[in-house]
Length: 458
Image 1 (cartoon, rainbow, N blue to C red):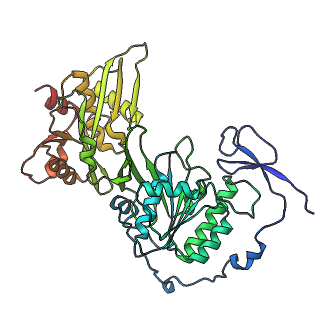
Image 2: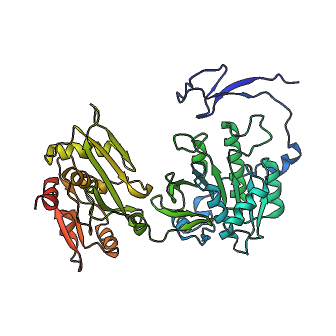
Image 3: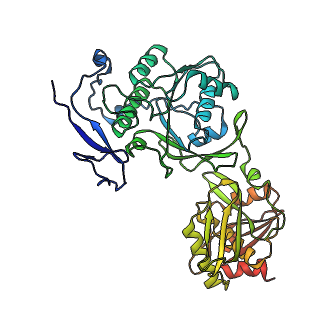
C-alpha cells in the first residue's frame, strides 16, 4: 500500500509547499494555504479509462487543416449575441462570472431556454441547487422548455455519462467550483480540482462540438475564483456587473477568441427575469435632474455602441482637515489628475474642498473621452452654475490643459442628436474634421480655459 502524503497548496495561485505558511510565497496572499492529499490512493473510474483515453494525434500541414464550421448560433437575446460576437460557436467554452446574487444563474437559464427554442436539446447541470429550485427559477422567468434537461450532479464522470447518452447541443454547468473529478482526492473548489474539471469540460466541448457555459464564482476583489489558468483555458470570459440597489446589469466580455472584447450588453432585472435594454442611453438619462449644477452628459463608446451617461459632481467645503475624494464609476487617479489640471490651468481653487464624483446608473467610465465631462461637472458644481440641459460633451484632457481629439466623433454626435441634444462641446480638432450636421450646434474648444469660458464666463 502506498504511503499517504500531503502538501499545502495556495487556493489563489496554486503554489505548493511541504509545510504550512501563513503567507503564500507565490502570490503573497494571507491564509490561503490548504492541505491536500497527494498520496496514491484508490483511483475511481478505472472502468472508464479506455473511453477517456486521449485520441492519438499526428502533426498536420497547416494548409491541409480544414477550416471547420464557425457558423454562429444566435440565442435570440440581442444584447447577449452582441457581446458574444453574433452568437455561440460550436465547441466553444464560455466562462461567466459575477458577484453573488447578480443574476448569473438567471442569465444562464434564459440562455439555455433561448438556445433550445423547442428544437435543440440543452443539458443544464446544477451543482448548487436542487432540481426543484432550478425549476422554480425557470418557471418564474418563463423558461419551461421540455428540451432543457436538468441534472443535479457534481461528479464529472456522471456528467460525462449523461452527455454521451443524451447528446445535447449545449451544456451549462452551474458552477465550475461545485463539480469535481473523482480521480483527485482534493475537495471541490481547490486549485487542482478547478484546473482538472475545466480541462475535462474543455475536452467534452471540443471533441463533441458542444458549446459549453461555465458559471464561476468571484473573489472579494471581483476576479473569478481559482487560478488564472482557468481563464486562459476557456474561449470566452464574460463578467456580469451591476451595482447593488440598481436593477440594471451590464454584461462585458474581457476575453473572446471569436469576436471583439469591446462590446457590452445591458439588461434590467425584473420580477420575470432579465429583460434586454435596447436603448441604454435613454435608460441612463431618464432620471436626470433639470438644470442642476454638477450634472453633465457625456457620450462614451463601448465597442461599436455609443452610450450617453450622466456624470455628477459635488464640490463643497471640507468638514475635516483633510479634504475627501470619493469617486464611483470612474478611476480615482484620473479624477485627481483632472482636479490638478483645473486648478493649475483653469484657476479653480479645489485643493482644499471635498470632491464627490459619480456616474449615474451604476455604469463605469473607462475611456479618456470622458475627461471633459468630468472636469466640467466639477467646475459646474464649484461655480454653482448648471450646464445647459440639452448639451452633451466629450474630449480627452492632457496635463497642459489641452483638449485632444477622440475617435468615432460622428457616431457620438449622432447618438446625442437622436436623444434630442442640440449642443455638443467637443475638441476643436474633431470639429474641424466633422462635416456639417443640421440641427446641432458644435462648439469646438482647444483647452480647458476655452471650455470654462464658453460655459461659465460668457
